[in-house]
Length: 165
View 1 (cartoon, rainbow, N blue to C red):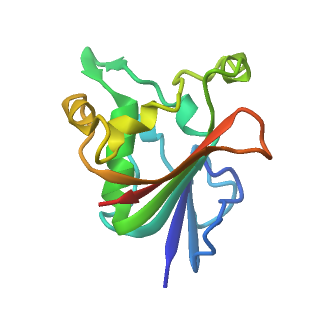
View 2: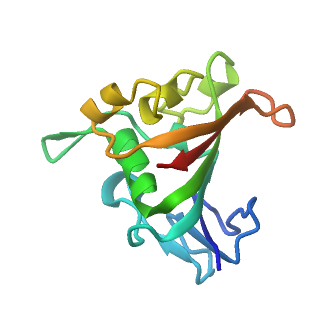
């Protein structure tokens, strides 16, 4: 039995890996009992450790701030989110993100895009990359890079496929 979690799922969580159980996290359940309400910037991902075989985020991570002050305390929500994803993935589990990225101007069009991703951003989360800096900045985990590519079907979207190690 495999499980997948789609972050920012909307009413129909995506399931590109064909998992047996499909869950979502969003700001509304949209009447779907497999979607949990959560603002992951503030509260993290509302599932237990090592629960999912897969986590996806389509047009999602660009909406997660890199730096935020809450009640006078400095936080790094993007690093915290990547740690949360690592936490809820089973060992060997896969993360797939699909996001508008630099250098394309469309990345900056939407005023809710507050996190600008480049081809080098992934290196802060992967073994053999700049993970030491990622850890220093608050990332608590390790991924292996399976694949990074520009999606030819959706212009200006960068895809990451990472494996929890």
